Amino acid sequence: PKQTLHSQLAMAVSEGMMKPAVVGIQEGMMKNRTSSMTMTQYIVESDTGDHLLSLLMNSVQHACKVCANAIKKAGPCDLYGLANTQNATGDEVKKLDVIANTVWVDCLRSSGVCALLVSEEEEEPIVIEDANKRGPFCVAFDPLDGSSNIDCNVSVGSIFSVYRRKSPEDTIATVDDILRPGTECIAAGYSMFGAATEIVFTYGAGVLRFALDPAIGEFIYVDTMTLPEDGGKKIYSANEGNCKSWDQPIKDFVHTCKTSGYAARYVGSMVSDVHRTLLYGGGFLYPAD
Image (cartoon, rainbow, N blue to C red; front, side, top):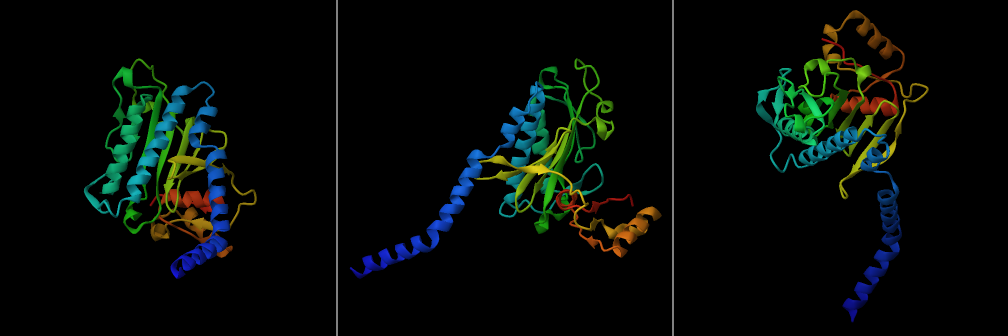
């Protein structure tokens, strides 16, 4: 019958024109999903005896996945806009700030390995007082950096750093356990929520980059990040709207960038600007104003 013939022709054309490309993409995707290292696998394999740190990093990646899901659904679920409050630094708080902060606090608290949590969204540090639910780590984090851009769908991110407490573990932790130089961090990183969700972190030796595959709910290894040896692209990144408040050496540096062939690139979300700088080179600065 004519209808059957048309159907067979359509199938033949479809298979002949589309199948090789689609199959090739699918095979590559499947191979990447099954043969590439996941963040969970890396955490387990890099565990040199500090099992509690592995538990902490698993909680960090879980928090990033939950935040990524909330951000993806922000529009349909009416999560854009202000929450009609201010955070500890005086910034207007968005609805997603509140959600992200709750997610991070709950994930880290329930890990059972944290003694002290410091969030940009909280006025005071969160001290874990229950001896059966605390551990040796103090974590400082911004649950949603760049949230002022969230309503216009610009990339945002989460930032974290981890310290091992110095006070006796049979006592509650104090702010002195975390008010320490960055050189004493034992882990740090960020997650970026943009066209893709990525997490970048280090234990102090090498910086690893993973991308979230939402279909399987796993962060897949992308590469080990290194700064370009030649400095990379000539890019400078700064909020020049505040330049009148900068110290003169900062003004002079930016002027030198402008007169020596540097291009300006500024997203306004620190995670995005730092991520680009690490990948492409150049410089990012956030002077006091």
